[in-house]
Length: 313
Ligand code: ADP
Ligand code: FRU
Image (cartoon, rainbow, N blue to C red; front, top):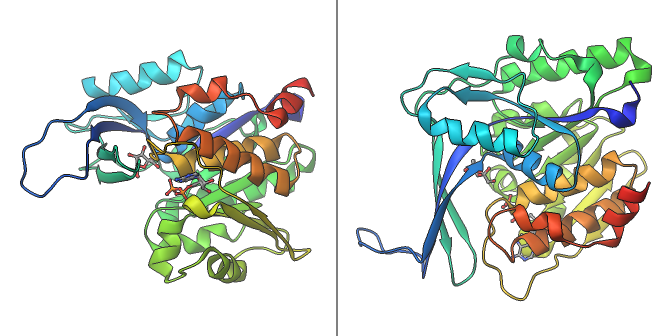
């Protein structure tokens, strides 16, 4: 199989997002009506697949899924969008993971309360059943350091044994626990979110990227998106620094998944051989447009020169 025809695999969680669009951020213990609302499939890796499919990329999600009725909506949504879920593991859970999300109509801010009563995280043993030869890129939403480390180790081993079928590894540090930091050691690309930087006490994107460099391999490339400040990146080996401005729309309405949209867009460009600078610019352009509308579906309608160039390749 040609490397270009292979899939991008995103490893992480899939959850139900219950979204309320509120006139303003509600007061505690008040009884309000939302302006609008919807249910949506969420979770970082799951959202990334949604965005990748909007670009027409072939991609797969792997993670734990619930066999509860509420979850069938999420599973069908993956199928409708052509997101492969063949290697997911199903669990019987009385309550499936979900997030309550408040979108503030005034500024598009998103407040997320995530709840996962008892869904087990994907294990390295489950992961080891994937057909490695089918993937060109595997992206990890860093969770459960022990299991995820074993998954990454298994790809490093595959790469050593199959140099002509090398799989690119990327890791996103987003989950607010510093225990996940060692997971970046073998990644080719590392994404670090503002939320994660905050728990490390890295209060600016420049400090964050500088400190992150101590934990990555020599050849790694690091990318740090930072909300309205845009994003920066570093090629660790050549010590070359890159930066991209945020591209705010006329009105910001929905920042839920802005980071996932940025990471997926950047990854899509990189996986098509686009240089790091142009890839983070593209990520900021697409994420900037996304925050101007609700959900992810309008991404398919965005016209962008880089997108056209990639599609025409
Ligand atoms: P997260 O969703 O993880 O909190 P960020 O807030 O860092 O992610 O946003 C990721 C990217 O989305 C930023 O680098 C930027 O390009 C874009 N973005 C986020 N918020 C805005 C905004 N208000 N206006 C324009 N672009 C934004
Ligand atoms: C957005 C998101 C939501 C989900 C939450 C989980 O980045 O993936 O879709 O509810 O984060 O932490």
